[in-house]
Length: 263
Length: 219
Image (tube, rainbow over all chains, first blue to last red; front, side):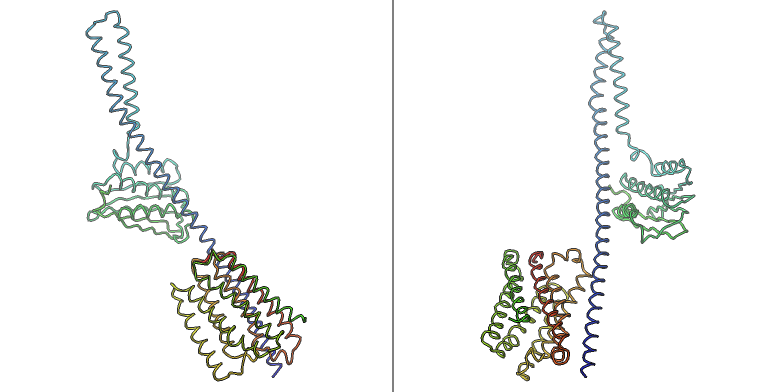
């Protein structure tokens, strides 16, 4: 009786020790897992924040340039035009015959300055996003890809509806991100971008024939992908990215008709 | 004075240190339920002093035992059930400490009414049941901590240190309390080794209580 009780006692002690060791191991491994997850989330948030800051910075820069451009065109250039007219008038009326040559020089300097300022104003206010169609913008992007010689990019479009500058800009950024990812990571030989209209909605499809990737395990690349998704959702659209190892990557975006003119 | 007596007095000193550290951090806990933990530690210190005085000064062995059986031990268990209940107040696990407290209270009453002459020296079943229930609550706490979002800041979680102290103390000392008579009668050497181990983990529990007050942030 005594010996068997002692055995039970020793077995009990052993069980307690084992339970304790298992408990500590589980606790430590779970702690490390959560710590790693926390660090990854922190890095991801920091990168997202950085990207948003960059976007805001670019927008502010663009707005400032446009403002300066408009000011040059509407204010300084107008005054110089006026100065040129006055000078030409003086020259025409010939009130100061001895100064004709100098007035010609002044008029020439003013006209040169006016040309330079108009050029500068045009450069500053030149906004491809406003002036070019989505097809033109995307074709230019595909052209840049083709110039690298890494792969062949092609755009096909049958969309003829109206879209706002914001939607155009978002779609351009999404395609740029897709093209860059394909160039950097996919080893694709061919990229196809299609924009079409179905029942008024806009459908953007991009496909590459590269090596594909596991969409659940994207690491740092996930920031670009989540930005694409965020942009689509901000336009009230649907976003789908499918990829399988060795079978390429396919991006499908749908923007509903009622949101195509989102400002 | 014998070594085992020294160890007993040492434990009272350790408890008093824990109480003093708790009082020192009163400002931190005075607006939370943790202030009652300070009061609890004070009562434990006074009870231990009373118990040892009755035992060694007045030689009233049964009075000392009764003090532990009918006051100190039920207070310990019921207090920790209450502490877990307050901790889980806004969580789904809040009913488990209540269930534990009711089970223990019923077991203790049955123990006291139907077996009035049993006490800690004879290992009443209510005592072992109390240990198992507190251990279950401590394990539940660690499980919830591991699956929840508070794991990364565990160092500042007061309940973490309290639960760790309880877990180590009750887990290590439960075999001793369960088989103490047998060990004393037949395996005296093992008994004395375990006697000191049991006191060691008791010291450790109060050290963790001190850390709980020093590092912990009362919610």
